[in-house]
Image 1 (tube, rainbow, N blue to C red):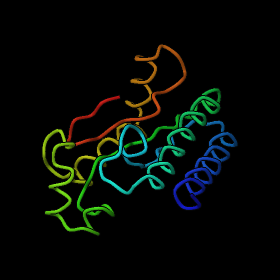
Image 2 (spheres, rainbow, N blue to C red; image 1 turned 30 degrees about the vertical axis):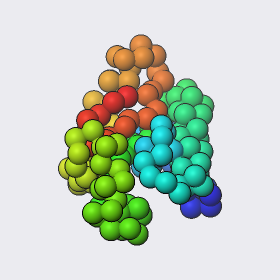
Image 3 (cartoon, one colour; image 1 turned 90 degrees about the horizontal axis):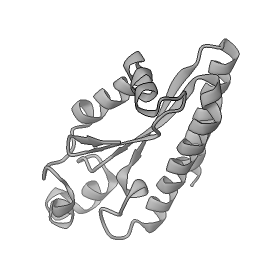
Image 4 (tube, helix red, strand yellow; image 1 turned 30 degrees about the horizontal axis):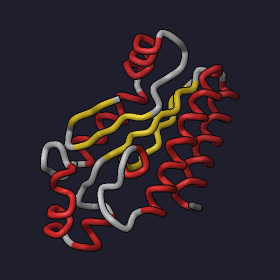
Length: 153
């Protein structure tokens, strides 16, 4: 919990203060995993998934509280990539066998290609217009799921 929940909380708190003091608005994006958003991808991840679920709630509440300062808070919830703990600990072949049915495009994510573009979109100007258009308010969408290159809000 200290790493998975407290670290994003401290990041959001520090960035929100900086954005409020500058009266500039801004965007904070937390990286997390789908295991905390929707379902477990692999067995034995109850504690880890619970901590990531806490991050998702932190992001939702922070987005609501900070939107009045024009600060957007979002999470990018990614599926599995080969650098994740599970494939590293059990090996690629065993991990693929255990999770293959859960991955929509039946491939591992490429963090540089699949995740980086989503984060850049969210922190950019296009991200703020998208939120305004979609919600018709100053609030924001708080979680994007990047799961085998398909993106769902």
